[in-house]
Length: 608
Image 1 (cartoon, rainbow, N blue to C red):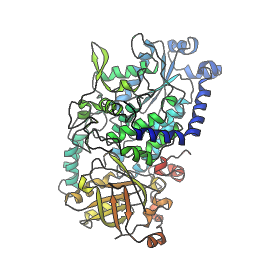
Image 2 (cartoon, rainbow, N blue to C red):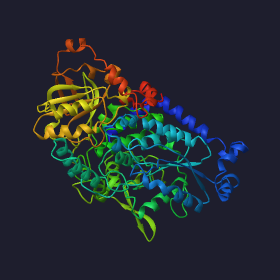
Image 3 (tube, helix red, strand yellow):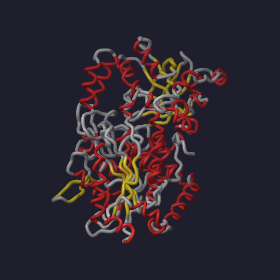
Image 4 (tube, rainbow, N blue to C red):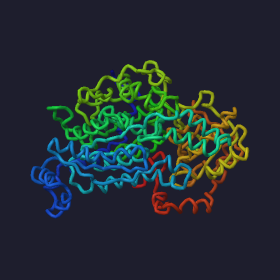
């Protein structure tokens, strides 16, 4: 199948835009690869320190036999249900490496915070910047520079982008990502959301709400909705950075350990008995085509809006420059192929049963909406990723993911849920923002209503509780961007706004803050850029201004005369809020990141 002309045009534009930066990046990689191995290159004392704590047999492999040594970077902790399974992975990895005459060392650990724990708390203001901390932690681990390859153990929201950014700064190393899978299905996401809405109205007390939440989040593994964590896994599959089909196999499945062992075999270039191949360095693998493949997969599945920030930063780490215009143009031709909560009732376990990432990848490649000629961590390229793994007689086998086993969850490209993707770019006199339309009812794709301006999500919640928002309203929540307070997610706003919409009111949210893939069915223009704290026009909006959000036309406009709008003063972030948002729970340690953060559309990067 030939490549769709829009995909080809967007990819060509990205390639041309990135020519100088990508060229310099590849030159640095080539220079790194020309060096001698770590144990040959380093001084004797350096090498002795590096292997002092490993068994004698591994010392022999690393130093005398010059066998491959795999660096493992792990985001293990048992605060995150999704990361708790990683506890035993290093022993599995070391055992499998030794079977092939290689060795493995845990190079380092990186922090991993759970947004589900910190939602609506001051700690959430560290969340976005934790991505760059994880990238730096990955760099610290790999800077031991004794490794011939790397395995990245991580799953959730900021962890995978952080690991990927860090790995790409060591792009000379073959690298495979190793997930742990989703938890078994508990209380359905739909029923959980209903209880949350009832709680917002005072119809359910704390005990009832806690019971529902614990029935939904109840076991090891990722949350089962299609938010940022599970979108991460879809994108890694689309970029060919996993063992094929690894993303949504549950932690307790007997297949899970064998897939982890296969990750070791893959990074060593021994993915099948008797087969040897060169697993490409990750920096060569992640080029503009791989990035576009990830973008296409995100759009086709209605994935997390957070990736319009994260993948800009990921791409930049590989010397590739993308922006929201690229997403918007692709969204016009990439069809929506899945209905997974919040843009449907199914969870990721049902998605996996219907065909999972392999089905989506196969459909997109077949429709010319993914590049089929990219490098992946496997010898067979992206075609291998259109499959689902299984164990047969103790051996891994893959079978085609197509056709869909449930077309209520996953449909072919020839008959999609929607002919266009699940994300849209909005432009207008407020700035540039994005909206996830895949979960918004069609009769809410255009909202025109008076503004009510808030300086915090707590202020909006207070107004809702007081009954002040029982009308058509566009809620504008400002001072929530990277420079203001670290750009926390604002999920605590979803239940009250959903209640208002359920009452029949026309409701929308406009903010320079974040909402993820679980942002719900209320139209939300998010990631407004430039943000209010940087002098963005969102700080010009006043109570009562008529605002029109049109996700069909891709516009967001404050309907006041242009001369008045141009002359209007930009409000200043209140001093008491600026000071309060910068202190407590370690937030003061991130002050430099807030000062240096780029815009959301530039990836909110803090290292440039």
